[in-house]
Picture 1: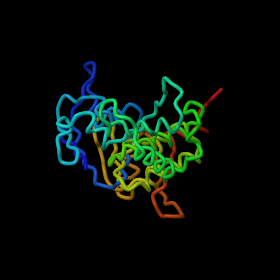
Picture 2: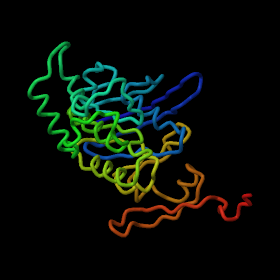
Picture 3: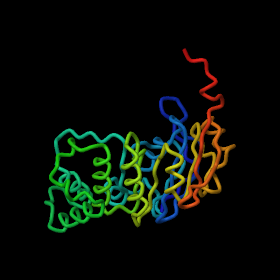
Length: 262
């Protein structure tokens, strides 16, 4: 599906990514995890062509990514980012309909097939009741669902998500990750919650200071030593009683109750 070899990224004289090599299995759900500022978002931006690395190779469906024009990329790669401000007050239906744009010629009008695909995408995400609402009036969780529906309307085979559950309550965190996990396409998400990542992702990739420092399935890669090296906190690894997947309990190096706070 997507393969990265020896990727380097530098911005403003600062080295952001160092010799990243990475491969996604088709149909899988992979999580990209690491501290703030570790390079997760920059790496995703290289994949969806918002940033251009100084060295290395990215292959998408066996072809060098630069050999595809932006329209070809947009037909197959859907992106959901944290910032989703719009300049105009679009309805949900119209915003999801924008996912059909890469499939059109310039000035080509939307077809009945486009409308049917939008309706199907709204149904798949479970937000048909919101289709006439103005996007800017929705809650954060509802907005994320709309953006996922737009990616489905693109008929993307790869969905990239940058912190899709950030600032959302637990209901929408679970709903969005369950939805993403159920999609029959390849998914890659930068996630800040290690427990959510462990419950939903098949593979985890740890990024720290711009380096890919560890990768593997959650039960193999989630170890106290790695958590401490990457995040600087102690972790006790348990298992979720419902599915026996890893579940982490965290402790600071110094217990908060030992601090002399006045």
